[in-house]
Image (cartoon, rainbow, N blue to C red; front, top):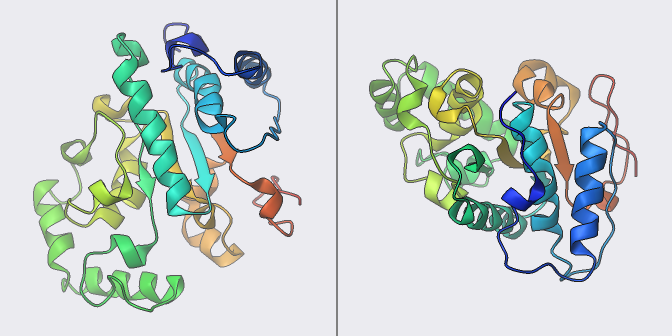
Length: 246
């Protein structure tokens, strides 16, 4: 556990909107008591920065990651935009945070056979794995060279929030996002104060076979989880002992 923080350390704007401060305080208080929180508010309320400001101090103090799940890229970009604003407004090193936006393999895999292809997620994942296993992906080879065979993930760590469009400038961004950073989060000093990883919810609520193959996402459920537009989830999709209702 590190230095105690408050939502004030992470709210990047000079003034609060109507009732916004009270909502932030209630969310932070509920999170410290390990309660599940449901926030229903109209557009323009500032929900994204409200939730982030409330949960970031709790995540930092307890060395947790935040999984912020959105349905669209536009929503993803909004989260990263607010994170960057929080990062730039903080004067305390201990309050500096970062985050990563993850998109689908069809947009993050740089290989010409997969990038912008019409492959489904499962097909793209299988093709990507085959290309890497057979040493036919130059982007993966470049990443291995830069990270000493994936043994030095700190060489691709980030000190500030990164959007998906920025991530694709790096070698093999899909592997960086889903494998390297998953391994390095609890170990790399450069990533120690990285409490926020932001994903689309397809990664955290996939089918059972996908969960069995990718236990890292299952483990992430034991961190802090934010789901944007929960009401649009039309059925239960249990993960272990955790289920998400309509």
